[in-house]
Length: 267
Image (spheres, rainbow, N blue to C red):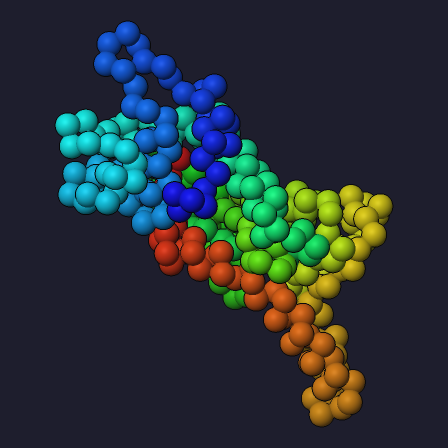
């Protein structure tokens, strides 16, 4: 990662917002805090666990450029993350990384696969405010109800790299967020049946591209399972699904590798 991450671009993005110190103890170097922040995300550490890991693991200290005589505590680590959130730098960080990848031919930008996943939030009102998080909402998927938010992503169809991300309440329809998930250079877009009708939405009327959206099974099952039309349609849908499969990999990283299955209550 030392050779892969576009460090200079990320530092230039964050530096205008990073405190220079208050005349007392100097602030930790921005490069060190950025590296700590990224390691925390890569390995799924909590703030206290990240502080402890820096004391216990030599290679993590070496990567961050820190020494045992001065290790950022959990509050400092938390404050750095809040700094990024306050100035809404996550989108800028994604743009810097994607620009770096594109310059090296790793992001081909020919096609985009879109999808969304539900991130649960506590639905209980047993908290100090006696209410649910106002930014979260309930939605129904199949025969089950869920409360929380949705993470909508746009993924490069060739490499599987994420180039766009939007967070909404869980009850927001997937098809309404497609416009924010495209970079504008696609020749085709793939999505599941939840994006049916996306090509007819007014925000896409001037886009000339192929919309490869999964058909609902009911649209071809009516011809009979063994009919020629149904067999051909199943093969077509299978080919579409092979392209869409790449969008599921980032969700696995989010929910399994990073263990982000539930949002904390904002209040």
